[in-house]
Image 1 (cartoon, rainbow, N blue to C red):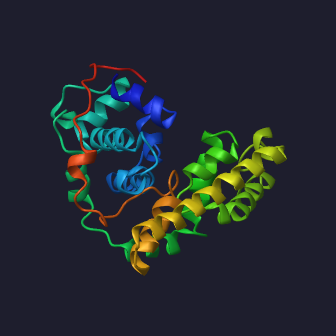
Image 2 (tube, rainbow, N blue to C red):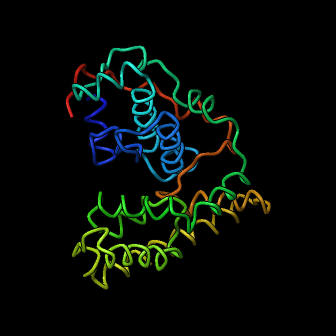
Length: 252
């Protein structure tokens, strides 16, 4: 399976720019920041319950590598294809090491500081509107994908999206405006279950206060924030398996 097909399967879009959450005319720094942000959601260090986390992380790295390479990006923009056999997408490349070179060691405090600055910002509002459009108002998927969000943030997220609907910035998808009570209840039940599992994890592992916070973030953010730190520095061998060979010239 080629890169674009993998993107479609894992990120629900074969558009590399959409995978990174940026527009086609994005600058190099904007593309890098897009990669930075999405890596918060798919890094294996922080997605222990996501069996596809490793694959998503590798595919994300390849998507960034294409758009960060001037020649590769030009070909993709013009023809809508990627060269699966190029050095940029070297199948032996260690994407974990590549990521760590781009983003030096990140501490727990760095993550918490980022979350504090991000929540309530114009950037978060734009990201939520983009997710709302991409996922057609499905709150289950929006809450799973939204950066730095837990179940406790749901009322705030809904308020942001409702204001965007009222301002006619986004359409009023029925999945959002007429969500069933059963679906809302199931989402709450799932969140409560994850919270309980996090507490049990702390007790079983005898974690101290800082480690407990790390464990809580890991469990709480499973399919949401998902990563972007170096709290566990020895996971390269476990998470960086060689990706399967792809085919050349897959179209969007």
